[in-house]
Figure 1: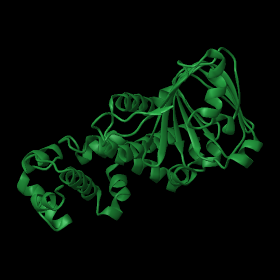
Figure 2 (figure 1 turned 45 degrees about the vertical axis):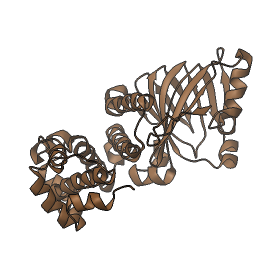
Figure 3 (figure 1 turned 120 degrees about the vertical axis):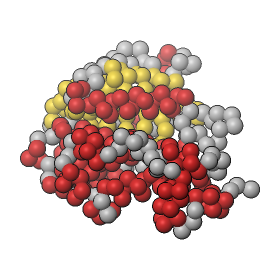
Figure 4 (figure 1 turned 90 degrees about the vertical axis):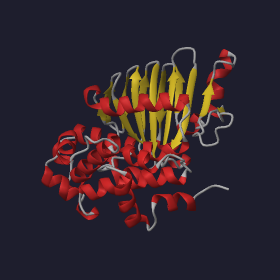
Amino acid sequence: MKSDPVPGSGTLLPVARYSSTSQRPEDRYPAWREGSLLQFGRLYDTKPLVPFTVETSSAQLGSIGFSHSRMTSQNWHRTPGHIRTDGSDPLMVAIRFEGEGRGDANGRAFDAPAGCIALSDFGQPMSHFSETAFTAVLAIPRAVAERTLPHVRTLHGLVIQPQVAGLLRSHARAMIEALDAGLPAHHAARLGRVTLDLLEIGVARSIPSGTVTPVAAATGARLAAEAVIEQKLGSSTLTIGNLCRWSGVSRSTLYRLFDAEGGVQAFIRSRRLAHVAEELRRDSRERISDIAERWGFCDAAHLSRLFRHSFGRSPSDYRAGHDRP
């Protein structure tokens, strides 16, 4: 395993990589079980079904772990003994780009076709078979999962079918490409939040409507709207009408969801100002007018007026106060 620092790029997100290709064939499986980042022998009993190879990369996106791997076919078993001794209880989310799986999640049988997303609660036993596969995996701490998703224990063995999984699947592929190219570290937490938003939307569309409480439904609608806002934040097309259409909620629902922030327009304005402040803290030498245009403000004067109201200083003074020596 190695972590990839890129020369002169201290602001890039660290990526840990592991590959069995340089090892002797007979050493690949035991080295992976005991020597890879997660020490899988501590978490599962596994049995390769063909000569074993693996290539994997992982990074931390704010509060969640994100990894992707190509791995040969195996049987996997997480037992009550593992649960008692390893102290690990995240929600694991497997995004299957290639290769099928099937198994039993504490009495819940499931089939996981290529293109689906399969959820497993590490606090419960599970046995499954996986074909040789290309997957991305989210490791979501239980506290984060319980704040974001309804009834986490009931999600053990849930499969989000390919036709519903497309948003998060496409996002995960884009993150893989970004990590391989070198992702600025300051984007990590934001990407983690968007990832959780898209997962919540997929879960809400995949569980029976009767199991979704009004609070969970409102949370899902709010997260869906926030994800759209973040994606379209600098665009002039981010209007209330378009936001309702893109996120699938009515105007009255949209206003109610953001009432605590003073309304949806106030929320959008605060997110735009937060991005402007982030750029100014990074010692941007761009003209204020160019930054204003990029983040959806009509001109520099309009941005300066709103920025001073929120931060107590003009954008120029704020940037000067964060100048690096």
